[in-house]
Picture 1 (cartoon, rainbow, N blue to C red):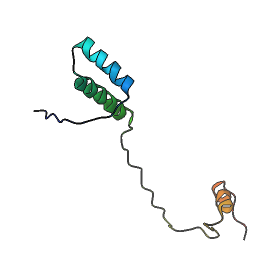
Picture 2 (cartoon, one colour; picture 1 turned 30 degrees about the horizontal axis):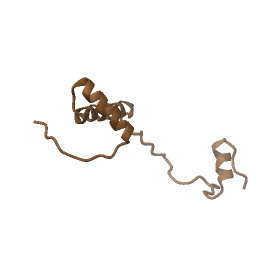
Picture 3 (cartoon, helix red, strand yellow; picture 1 turned 45 degrees about the vertical axis):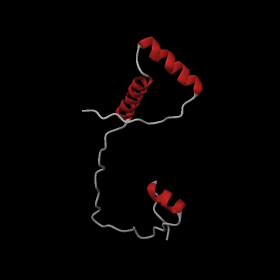
Picture 4 (cartoon, rainbow, N blue to C red; picture 1 turned 135 degrees about the horizontal axis):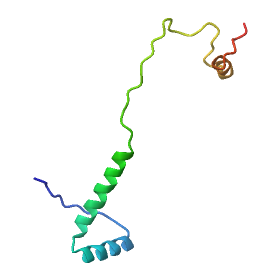
Length: 88
């Protein structure tokens, strides 16, 4: 059984006027319109969210830094990534 909870929200006055008009036209309550709008929004968010896919793990045979790699020298690291060997 669904449990209903009473709450207070603050919304723009023009939006409330439009909501009241729609509720009267459709013979519905403002609460039911807000519930539907919130459900629609949450469903759209869930559809857009990509499912979680764990990344594959890689364990190198020889872990650790390569000789000559200085983690504080970003230019040397970019050169290594580009296949340029460090100069001694």
